[in-house]
Length: 490
Image 1 (cartoon, rainbow, N blue to C red):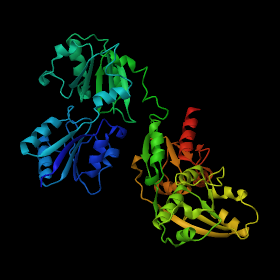
Image 2: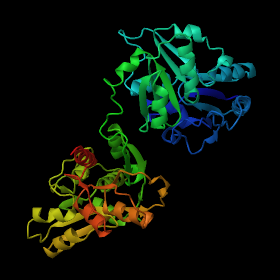
Image 3: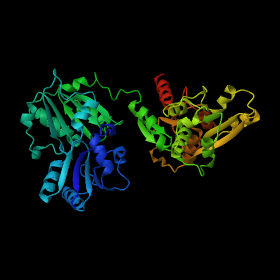
Image 4: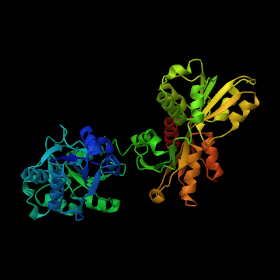
């Protein structure tokens, strides 16, 4: 049985620009040959059962020559595998996808082309430069600038006559040659030009000038590769519609210490605000050692269920449904939640909480309960680790309090290599605080702002001798992000 090869474009860098078809194939492939410019976040979508080969394809640093890549695709497909050749940008825009397709045809291997968003268009768009505009340019020309000298066959005289936009890809190293050739063939030295480094990523930087000034500006800016070059009057629009590099958190490096399985919402909020997010999970969520106590909270009748986290809500309902029951089993039981995130998790499962304290701490529930709790049965659904104030006080008041262990928070080994040039570190629980400082030891954070989701988390930070710079108004990731934004805007 012969497999099939999919020549897939991964887009320009921003993982949110990956197409649905590309995401589907990346997650279902048996074998993936991946380029160096494909982001780690996109690469993380690969199935754990897939074989992955990195084939490089950076300028002057190819892991495999093109002819060996072609043969690799053919050989793996003939083994009956679903093969994905994953390329940055679009496979047919200076991506050698056409060459690979030719070889697949010659070898009799079935294939499919999956276009990707090209950086030639996306890069200028993220820099606020429309490649076409009725007032400035009615044509777009794409040129490979990889070897922009006379040997490339570029018709410089014809190129210089164009009034539209010219985008040079892979030409950053030859910027001087490009500038001199255009001027030599008649382009006015005051022609606008922009260089966009690491386009569509949080590290994007754009330097605009003219053919006469751009080299000096680039030398001063010390832009890193990869970068693309845009020539034309459309560059004038950069200052007016520079939407991406003016996001409130653009250029900020923010550490998210939340468990990886929980981090997505907070990560998304910061990324949408323009930040570079470093995932540094210090805990992972694990099942309880025994379900006995959790099962009791489901099987027995309680007057109150108290949830202290969204993790507890998720674990409780997962167990409830696994036992063949649903929310009707809770009829007549009142529910309290600690924190708005916990309350929101409950609402998504069809229940509205009866009590939600203003502060994100279980002890804040105490004033909301009557002084006399004789005969009242309360099940507290939480992690194996947790504070005892509420439990002890309710027992003192006469309540029958059952501790239902829904999950455990386990420390995970963390790699601190990415903890450089950090602007903000976020904490969403006391356990993330403790495990973070255990992981970094005496390492300095160089004045990074420490942001906490609530009072208990802030207290844990202070116990480590650190100052809390930001505290969320309520216990939700939305409030934490807003608190960071508000602090930085002051």
